[in-house]
Image (cartoon, rainbow, N blue to C red; front, side):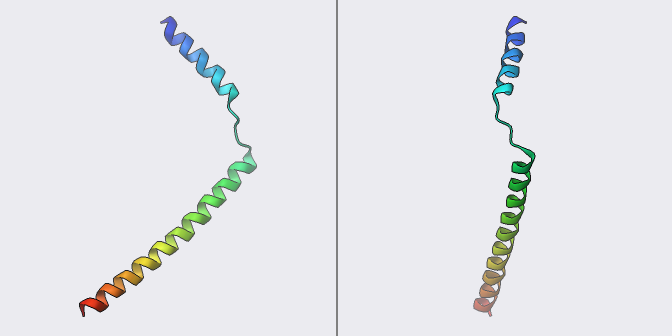
Length: 60
């Protein structure tokens, strides 16, 4: 039981040492992730469209 108590005390101590991001940093990161995800989705969709039409052209 003593080991469990010591573990949680150490966890609490370590959490105080963490450098938490500010609200602005989180917002900026979120926007960046959404923009990059949208760009990648468009890119992958375009490549898929081109390959699909290329394969259809080869088959016909």
